[in-house]
Length: 392
View 1: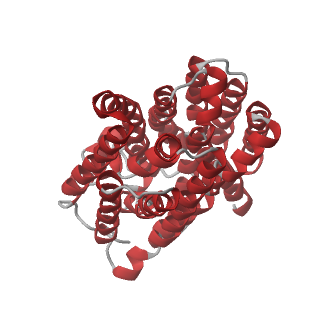
View 2: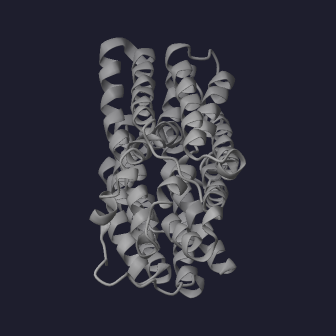
């Protein structure tokens, strides 16, 4: 079990790397293959949308055949996507590569969560989920200064070939060592589907916040922080690497910090709501009173990342309402909303930025973009006020 979890954690490190690495590669991809920030926003959105679209079949596969074959088969597709990216000659190839990588990374975290929900006590789910995100977010770190250093030393294409090989190795190890827990039989006449879960009223106030909670942190760290630093502060790739590293470390710290708070305070709803409101405040600072230098940007972006790491706690809140035989479909349904929201917002964010740029220049474009993220998060928090609290 422990070795299988370690393999899936390695896969999740790769997943975090792939969802964030375009922010650092933005300058070199623009110079060498003509990919604009809007092109990369679309490609990153395609990753998240493809990832999200896979959640329903992944959930069914986890409940029916288990995580071993599900993870092994799909992660191999991600390795093919990394190879396509290494061969890219234009923005459309980047789109295709990110679609394949989205398919490949779609089962990794949910396979971990499936094992946590099936094997460990229910009260530990939030802590384990947060720890998995924290360890996996080392991929965010690999996608910052280490990636920038590798690109400068070896070039971006050899670096991505190395990532393709690493991804293929994780696929092989998953097929060898990831365990499949015994299946849970559904009660007679109550097999259930995703529609069964959507009829649970308690989820209706949770799903909107799940849709938007990860949007600001993923949007900044995964795409917009690099162009923002380059356009507004004249930062080079090394400086972008340092700032994105600071935000990535803050996101890791946030994942670990959220994990045990439901047991400490006796509430999941309160922890989630307070954290997201603090993240909203940081976004408003970035939009309305932006710092004057890269160090200030790093501090505010780190706050967005730290407080925006509520994903595992919202997942634990929703999981508490799932019947045992639908756990696989349940965690992937929540992930569908979480990742699907990021994908939709990434695509829309490129248009928001372009509209702001046309209307008032770079400063206005980024202020509009950050306000857009803040408005989405605020709307999710408003609906979540009506959520029913539950701890295990």
